[in-house]
Image (cartoon, rainbow, N blue to C red; front, side):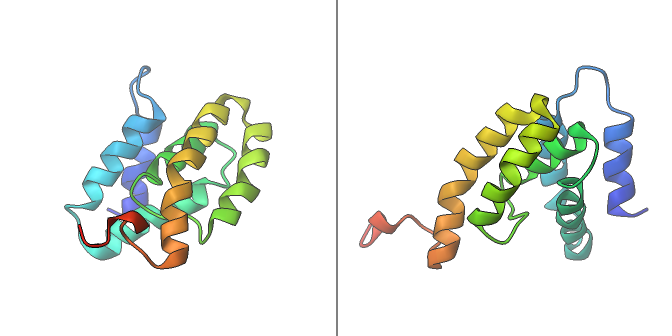
Length: 122
């Protein structure tokens, strides 16, 4: 079974009260216990889901950004944000939260620093 099959199964067969964030959390947890190739596939599918016509899949993908980089730069997130909110108004809060979570991480990535800049000598 492929990682994307599991991802699609979880979304397509979710209980009525399951939120996109819960699916994202499960996928991120799963990525720690499967081989690297399949773990990377979760991120690739997440990238594809950002362009999906399914607002639930878009929201799941946004939730994957907690521990991963789905795009290459902060500017890419900015470019994606407004069109996503326009296409799927129900995801606006998730998109805004994604931007808040991601901004510092992408800034550290741009600078090549894993830790915040103010911790030298700590």
